Length: 129
Image (cartoon, rainbow, N blue to C red; front, side, top):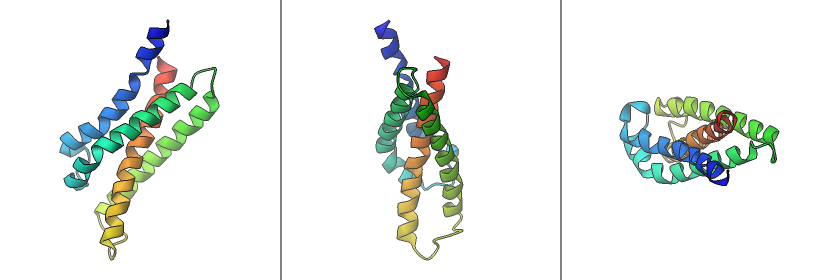
């Protein structure tokens, strides 16, 4: 039974693969500068794997299933919010006069997007598997 539980942990690799897929398939995030995506996908993948794994492990009955659900909901909320903010930044709706801040915020929001998705994937995987 122990090896089955360890195999279930591999669900986090799916969350980690999403930033790589976004880097290779340009139409997933067409509003983002491809250079930013190419530079950030490795660290973002690692963060998404960690966030998915943590949420998955918290969702088990012996840990904190309610905390995991809250973490997953917060992750989903942050992913949706960061998507809208990334679109607004790409369209120059705010921070037009501060391109350095705009670039830094875009990079942070890219990471937050996939960390939030990773959290949600971890919780859903724990409930489905």
